[in-house]
Amino acid sequence: MRKGTLAIATAALLGTMTSAFAQGAAAPAAPGAEAQQVDDAYLAQCSPQATKEFCGCIVSVADFQIKDPTERMIFYAYTVGDFDKAREQRAVLPAEQNMKFNIALQQAETMVHDRCDKLRPQQAPAPK
Image: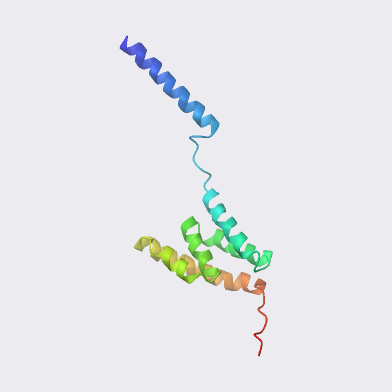
């Protein structure tokens, strides 16, 4: 009797898990989905102030250099000049991650200078 009950319970559990997986409930999020959300938020913030090409260039640098979504948020905060927010977010990173991120951030900064600065909107001279 116990074997029969156990077999029925196991079959029911497997059926539930299979059904949930088929519906997408148990499927993990797409690997780049969180990074894409961070990119979209940055583009929404960048677009009113800069050209589409410049904003897209910054995102392409992040795609190449910075994979972690949290690190991307910090990178984007730096690029828009929100240094307090960037420092605050960076303070919660573990020391080892922060050291690795520093290297990626320096490489990203070099890429922005080489690839994106020519697309940066020109500031109007200050009135005299």
